[in-house]
Amino acid sequence: MSATSAPLPTLDVSQTPAVPFGRLVSVELRKSFDTRAGRAYSLSVVGLCVVVMLVIALLFDEGFQDFSDFLLAMGGTLGFFLPIIPILLVTGEFGQRTGLVTFTLEPRRPRIVAAKLSAGLIISLGVLVLAAVIAAVGAVLASLRGFEVSWSLEYSQVQNFVLANLIGVLIGFALAMLLMNTPAAIVGYFVYSLIIPTVVGIIGAFVGWFQDLTPWIELNTAQTPLFTGDFRPSGEEWAQLATASIIWLVVPLTFGILRLLRAEMK
Amino acid sequence: MISVEGLTRTYGAFTAVDDVSFTCQPGRVTGFLGPNGAGKTTTMRVMVGLTPPTHGRVTIGGHLYRDIPNPGRHVGVLLDASAQHAGRTGREILTIGARTMGLPASRVDEMLALVSLDDKEAGRRLRNYSLGMKQRLGIAHALLGDPSVLILDEPANGLDPAGIRWMRGLLKGYAERGGTVLLSSHLLHEVEIIADEMILIGRGRIVAQGDKKTLLAGEHASTLVTSLDNRALADALVARRVEVTPAGDGLRAECEAVEVGRAALEAGVVLTDLRTGSAGLEDLFLQLTSDTQRDAVAPAPATEGHLA
Image (cartoon, one colour):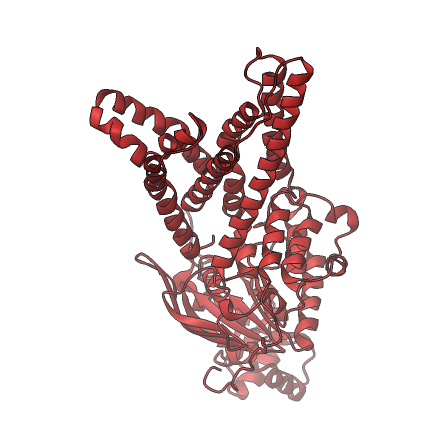
């Protein structure tokens, strides 16, 4: 058969444009809200912000109800839960095996990675905006209680709020691609955000030189200046943020992307 | 249209696909047949870029799959009907596919109608689908972009007999309109009826390929016959130098059916049953893949043996 068969006809693909990137992003956005689990998660993150806001606005004593206080509280809450949104966006392709279809309809995987990253960032920014609105509602509620509420906000606070959450979202993204498994990636994120800072803190308490080293190599510690003091990290603190980000963000993200690009979709 | 060239895929020491080459022509249904674990799925996964090959390559219409822009518009793929999010409805799964490919929403309704999933079924979540419904949805998904090439892994799995007949008609019609169809199966009967061309694979290697006639050409003819006077017929056949052995109520003659008919006509014997006694594709298939089967193919049970 193979020896005698006529030359195979070719497929004319010159008239077919590639799938536009914007369409890939919009499909990824749709995919993160078209299941009950996907909707429920995003809603519960927002719901949690509302609960935290209500507790601070209605139950706390006066003195913690400035708009910037609410924003910090929102940032703290989202820091734990926002990164799970990009994790679900990536690991769902493996857990539910939808990757088989996703990567057949767009075999150029870097485009899918970029589309997922964009969708994850769009959703995260959307949640951050909602959180800011919730923080504002909290400040209004507190002033209705007769508290004195300051609305002043510095640019650096907004920038830090966005920056810290973006770092979290990107780390979630990196872990999801590295581990390709929902529970593992979520646990991995909590190990990174809860256990590692604790362990590093304990070691630092006993080993003096390690404590000095910590902000250079541990990203949670390096981010502390974003939330404390005058919210303006010094040059050295920015440098620490940069080196710790290389270790905890750039390296895992690079290996995660490489792994996803080469992975065999089962 | 599909060209597999010297494809090998190894996993460590295990060779899943071993130097496999074949082609699929447009206007024909090519059946890819082999026992479980023979390498069918791996070959198909390499075709669509989900698994990188160790050696060799696959082109579709002269292109590597990853070089085809918006591939869903050219190549319809169904590898695993269950590989969809269990929490999405059937309609939503097709909608995501249609959106990615840039198709109008009406295409989703057309495909749902084509595979006979009604509105209520389309609105159910995939976890509530039977395997047969998932399979129909998967075929609808593969056909969404109106592709000219179809690659289907075990598409008949889970379909009821009416469903299998429906799919057969669908794929036949698709090939008659010039489409290229490659479908895999571990069930010979499924493929035998629909495929114009067959590729038999066992333990990662191609053991035979060609159309049904070519595959059976090497087999010697054998005919089973029953008549009102078997003895006279046997004599007539022996006179024609045909080897005859008793078989059940009748005879087995080692020749074509037409020879038996002529002998019966000459001897004036009335035939009551005449059919081919050739081993057929099934035996050929089992024989060709015998060393690759998980279960030893049992020879015809011996009647004289006693189990003490």
